[in-house]
Length: 176
Image (tube, rainbow, N blue to C red; front, top):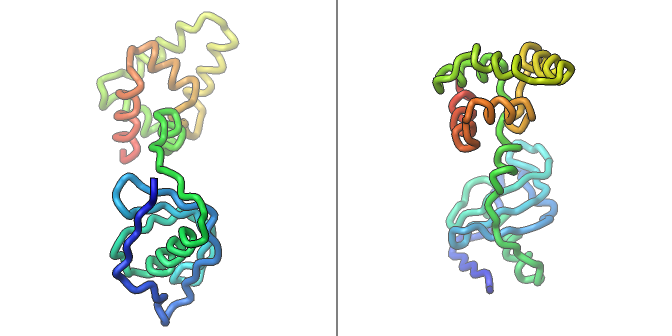
């Protein structure tokens, strides 16, 4: 499938900034027409240089947008491949979710109708004493919890909370 890009805007970089596109590593076509995600090395309008994912939208003339858009045109003209965007899997999305503090996690559970005592009951019901003690240490002393931590998965399963419900609770608890 041919990637179409029709540019009616100028690709002239702003003259009053230090902004620069140094290198494009890859270009991915988004699901929306003429939107692209570009893995590139840039110097932003503040003069800071770094590698980033840059989203290029048609008609955007702010900051580095015209420079990156011109880079995409050159990428295409040079015959480089443009990959199709594939949304992240559920697991990839969960891995990328922010960690929660113990306070956020506990408030999220309570706000979702689960008592802290019910979590403690799950931990107390772990048969192997060493595994139970490790779970208790994780529950009491962890400074943060990753969405994909095995203890979170174990507690959710024991309380019959499905993955989508945990995801929703997690997203809400992030702002507590």
